[in-house]
Length: 115
Image (tube, rainbow, N blue to C red; front, side, top):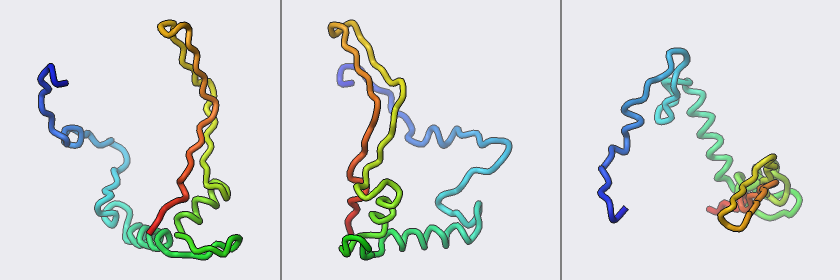
């Protein structure tokens, strides 16, 4: 990029040219009351409180954030999200016939939120 000039772009260009669908309604995440009603704001506030609340783990008796507890309930006690990926292959002849196959992805650390 240093060798060729880059034309500055408007960071909101996509938003400014957005054509909303003719059916349905877009959600205004900045003001949920207008699109979903008062209940949505109240529900998100309650969820946020539960995530930030310190709770005691029934099994380990250690204190932890509610968000970490919820993630462990979803993904298991290790908090690892495992995603099986069928048919993901990369092949190239440029590197001596390198073939790479990805079968599974594991995401660790999702349950390590801190105050």
